[in-house]
Image (cartoon, rainbow, N blue to C red):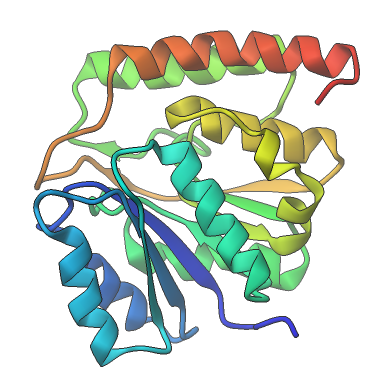
Length: 243
């Protein structure tokens, strides 16, 4: 039996400063969202904080603990599999660092609920640039990544690396999740590309993205390099029917 309450998957690693506020704001939304935290054994006790909150809201907060820092992509895959196995129809993803405003969740879910879209993306770049507290170099890197991805793959999405989304379960069921090997930015690109190539409808919902004020960014040069190579891999595999 499919569950009508949307579930939000939130991967964490050392997000003790933010996770309580994020969960509290998500639970306060009228649509009665569920939260699934996938914690990579955070040394700062993030998982323990979620466990304590879970005792107060056992039906709405769920926690998966992993043995170590295993990467963003695999955390989302585990979360997607959990959501599918437990019958959720609307499956969202967002960051734990308050860069994504939980209040935007309902606007992102709306096109999927209405049937306008199969995948809705909270976009920083549709109808203008909406980013607060990023240095110009970071902004140019992110914006250029979108141009680069669109030029190579042909996908018509402005914010190709966005991590604030709502999937209808049929999208994730159609993608072989076990074959997804990406992490970081390239994970988001790969999911978008595969959903688009399978004929699903993708829409972008404008949001304001605010750089984290607590904790440390997980951005690295390795993440950028992986994304740069991944778009070529996706294009080539698509040409040869190997997606």
